[in-house]
Length: 174
Image (cartoon, rainbow, N blue to C red; front, side):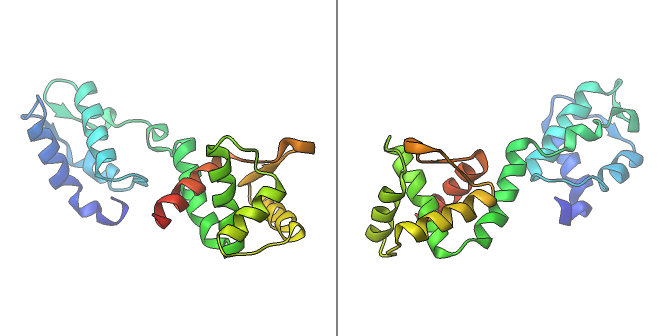
């Protein structure tokens, strides 16, 4: 939507026609104001915005007063994590990607992802790593906020950001 603000009025008109209030008029100032919003999402975000404005407008006209507040358009924590995980994956080397995938897979199996198990996972993935190499790469993943290393026998855990990145990695490798 960010790159196609010229389509706002066309899409809004269509969403209004599909609504239970097809005769609502949108003031031009509303379309102008919406063209300056950041639009983090897709067309669905615009559709939700139109639904909101139709719900709060007076009679059959949407005015500038019916626009949602700026917080309505802010990224949720989950969306922020999604965006951050995209850039995090691009910065990782193959070894780090294998370890992230290994932590994810072992955790899903109910197995604590220890360094020894991650060495075995890397070996099975045709990327042999020593325990020292695993330790170093886990430190790098921790610095990027993707994992948390536990003391003792706690193993390594994915952070929420790491989990989102691992899910994306799983999908991209499928």
